[in-house]
Image (cartoon, helix red, strand yellow):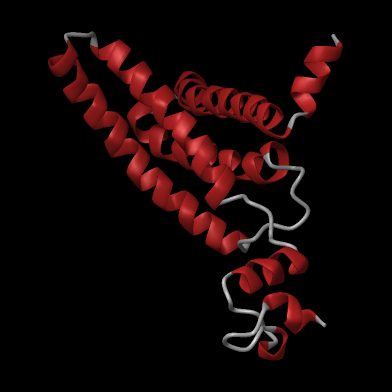
Length: 173
């Protein structure tokens, strides 16, 4: 039990578990909306799918910000910038999964279902890594930013940098 608690609190495995929970929740919502609206109101499923997709994508974005990456005190990107990247991911995800589902059965002699699952799971894993590092990542601390600029020779205070030919240790004295 102690080991399970450590995994949940771990920065990567905890995020991955929350990512899976969020993904499962969003999948259920995405599947339930068309079925419920079709059964209850007789609306054709094909008509409800775009609405369900928008609701599910909105829920997914919110869960990523508030649940999966909840440990982040301040995100590096504004909500608008995160949303822009998130929409671009969605624009890439659908055709990538569709192409994989179409092409992989022919290339590897596998079923369409296996290709769909494999492509979806692989894309989800890559998506988690991308969102973790490029969408919902924490803002750098001022000290860390200054240290990185200094390491690259881009310190905000040019007087703090050693003169050409001067020893870096001498510049600190």
